[in-house]
Image (cartoon, rainbow, N blue to C red; front, side, top):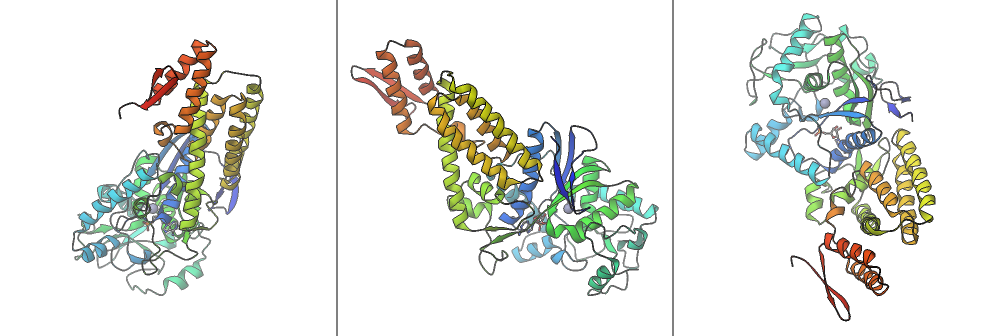
Length: 477
Ligand code: AMP
Ligand code: ZN
């Protein structure tokens, strides 16, 4: 089945053809670890997780890298100004290194809460400075970089005519924008820093241009090259990364290697909260941690953040999260029921037609996601599958096939991956299974009766047979 994505580079929906058949190499711009990531950041990161899960489900071998920016990202994504890490350190009266470590841990805790598949590499900028220096040296040798009196090293935009292709910004627009910050050191106001000298900066490394620190853009060029090579398939980020960050990454990587950098660029629209931008002043900055402490589940937050198409705006509200909680609860009820029915149900005639329905639902779900990750259609098919499962399983439909289907589809959205196995049976379900077993015993169907006893035992329910039927208790309590 052909897969199609919207490529920011061409502004078109294109068939996705990775460089090596069956293998996908992709890079995601990760967090700048100067504060706890908010749920908007996770919306963008979830685009990467959805791509990973969907492509793996489709049989691709995926190599996934997400970086951590822990130096060099200046306030307002600007060319001049304080490093975000250093500003946070100053306010907290900590070192920039302590800030980086603390917020890296918060980021990983958020990933865990949201059940992300772990990427294959999470490179940190501060541990890849030699790779960045090597890349800047290559740019210098090829005539794309120049050093000025202060010791700063800049990328020479005039040498790279394709600059502006990703963002669609013309040279005139870029120059007009860049004029706000006049820096007489630069040959062209659009030139951007590769290496910076600033004696006040806490995080410093020796380099051929003096002790200093790397620019934010060179970090992603150097780290993606190290783990994925000079050319790779997919690169993602939030919409604000298109310019200048990704535009600059393309310029550096292609200038250094002489090869095309990334085949497909995917960008996620920003998340709004209560229809406005998240801001500390408005008190609407939600984090994974803040929602967890309100009692919310990672599954519901995932669903709430994944329910809109990645190129559409998504407005998050606590009410939408409550709605997602209810949906996840319904999914879980269905899942637990099917899990147990699948373990016992005998095959009937209804099973064949169920298997046909299962194949149809699976195919429609896959087609929806292959259509530039059309999650609205995919989630509607998922709900239809849940409805079918609830309708068919009690009437001899193939519960195992239905359960298998739901696990697959939930798996692509990363839902109910951990909780289902450990969810205990509801009392009503226990009583229903015991009644079924009592009936089997009366009918002297010992095989069925034993099956049901074993199933209950697996779920931690012990039966105590008595004259008036079985009593039960949860073992270990
Ligand atoms: P940062 O930690 O600022 O470097 O951002 C990490 C990622 O989150 C980047 O890819 C940003 O584009 C993305 N991002 C920032 N704000 C939002 C938002 N409100 N909604 C979605 N993504 C965002
Ligand atoms: Zn990046």
